[in-house]
Image 1 (cartoon, rainbow, N blue to C red):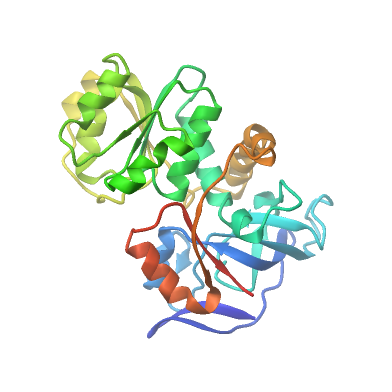
Image 2 (cartoon, helix red, strand yellow):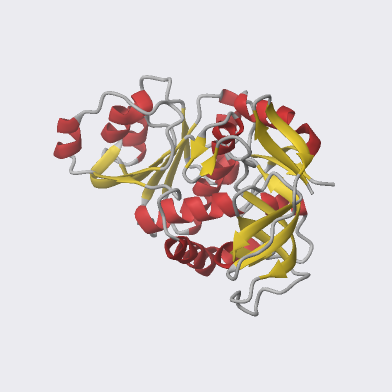
Length: 325
């Protein structure tokens, strides 16, 4: 099979052996592959959790047909099914997924490209907005870094769960102008010194009940100031930097719960439960077309380096997808 492999000369598409499923695994013939920010590090030779390093195949999600299932996979997952999944090593024509991460496509006519864009966004944002952010009717929620595919899904999930104030941030004016299409009631520019005041005004001076923070870095203390007393900050990403000055006194005064989340240290059972909860809340609205992500660009797998360069340039809105042909 063809796969994009990390080598000393960078990422190279070449022939590699087709993987074989273990007892609880599903082998999928991938038709489309969603790109995620973490892929950049793996492609550069760095580790991301248990994956990475020379010989690694990047990738975290995709969509295609089930080819083969392990002996302990539930009978509901069968060869020939059209599925989407979060799975490692997805920059390839075939990849293995734990059965608990595999889901039949919610719509019979859903394209491979759309299906491949969804698993990580749905799982990450349901876990952040609902499970940890405790979003409920009347909540005020902020998505810090909202113009990515994951961020746009977070806005939509917050509105779906009944949030009355949904704040999205983006420093790009064109992308910021589009956040309302995906549920934002307020879009702010975090380069504007007045953005915290805008959030406080939109919430009657309280601040938001929860922030899903994908930026962190130097914005962290401003984010504390925009969060309500007894509110929550769910740290999903650190695009603005891994380390920064943190106002511990403001954190204590506002009694904010600061919650770190990552899939890298979760057990197989924990991830299966995240997927189960996500389906329970989101599968019906997804099937009805009430949740969607824009596809920014589609590349063939052979142009993987161009696809990653497009993502690294941070000029995209929504998801970048590759197809295997």
